[in-house]
Length: 118
Length: 114
Image 1 (tube, chains in turn purple, green):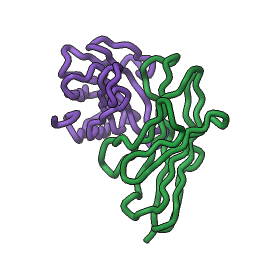
Image 2 (image 1 turned 120 degrees about the horizontal axis):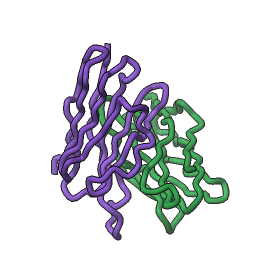
Image 3 (image 1 turned 120 degrees about the vertical axis):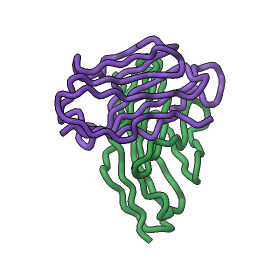
């Protein structure tokens, strides 16, 4: 398996532009998480999905942020309009559901998408 | 609500010496505890976990961690540090009362000097 795939790896955009980050989880993983990493706030959970359904979006900072998971192999995180304070590294992670497997509780992270908003 | 604290921003240790990276947690139920490591420009990688059973957990690259319920701690240890262990280390917790989300500590940067 190629692991969790994120794109783009780097994105530089201007304030006010729309940004779309993409994630392909590991096949068979039922849970998908979006995290944001900054120096000031560390690693924050934004939203997570179970079987393509959003379960908890309480970490989404404001209405400018939205996330979707149209199918089991694809998720997007969208920021519209973007602001300089959105600059961060955005990570996607996935894991299988519980059920006795040794990896059931372990997150596998993608390499991250580094966003810079000018 | 569940939370994780890593009291040290940075830990410095000489190569060959033992290392400890500290972590304390707060949960309302039984904790699932994890350590992850992050190398520059990479995503986080799983090191080890405690779910139940033996309080001393062994993981990747010679790391181990001890679960202490009375002190609500889960410190990461290694008997002999390597320069290549230099990285950012995250403690994380999940509990059933908090749903299925995993919450991470602020991270501790480990520097191992040759």
